[in-house]
Image (cartoon, rainbow, N blue to C red):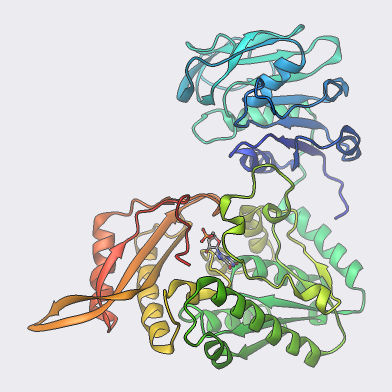
Length: 518
Ligand code: XMP
């Protein structure tokens, strides 16, 4: 993408919050990009950043393999902000002294601001604010030219700066990017707007203009296709491409029989009726269910679904004829080169997408969301006229309900799960919690249990409810749903879904569990 936005680079040292730093900077309407800490200086310079942020990380500068950077990074006449490990690293590299922790400081702390002239401008009340600490080592002796600008009762140097000799280096022992740090966003704004001098131009409406122009330019008079999944990413990518090239784009929606209730109808309504987009809906459910017959192994299910998907999609592309481009909703977290972004799940499950297609069919990829985080994609969706329902739909895995039916996938079991899932979704929406949860869904277990209905003994299926909160799906907490909501869902499922006589709630977090059961 051709860029005219000022940018700030975040060098990643492995903190779980690295992505959050970049997202906050973008919320301040400044483009920011994550690079591994080991990126050579020449490559950093080639991006022409207006500032650099060194993230936190789990290491100690005294570790044998501590991730370090060269001193030259601080001789670039570029503002630098070091956060947590970033601060210790700067101290270490610039010949200050970092003391090994005797005790970790973790959690909320009261920060007393000693200099509110730049980084802390407008932060706190009466020079006091709440911050989130999470560090082991601490600064014992300042590097030359630095002075302390804030302290806590535990850390005499909780923040420091050096503005001597044209240097503009700032360091924070705490995490300004997390919500618990009350003035954190203002601190980051002060850094990128005032200290780095970045103009706040990064908005989704400006993004639409650039992306549309670029897609037009790339596609020319050619034809492009896009696979719609019902999820927000492919929907936004398609809507954006449609705005750029109109009828030269054909979208394909494959009903694999593993969808949620009314999913196909919703896609049709949004894209064909509302956006007037060229849409082909294909019912391939029989083929998928035949392929999945008697298959119980999760990985095999995923592979079969992936293969059949590619086969159906490919056949349709040939039918359309002369297609040269494939539009895909790849997001920034999928392409970030960083130390920390790939959670343990990255290789645990085969994630089904159309990855195999472009090379096999000699299609050129168009990925208009490559630069964006999920929350930006949602804003963009609004810009290009998608309805809220679609924009805020919770994520749904490519292999669909097949990975939520443990054991063999049959039409009967699909029908049962679809009903139970619809009840979970409806009740979660009614409770007003839908947007707060990353996902809430039902899982059909491969066991039957004894129950009693009326005077009859029953021996029927068990449904598990899974609800999690998460920032990005990489890690997740089980959601502490109100008991009456759980009760209502369980009652309704047992009463309304025939074949189910028991409901359980999944109280595992990720890691060590995953969000999906298969
Ligand atoms: P797990 O189960 O690995 O899931 O904790 C993390 C997030 O990814 C979604 N997921 C998938 N999405 N294709 C997708 O597009 C897949 O094969 C797939 N498997 C899991 C899952 O719903 C959760 O949001």
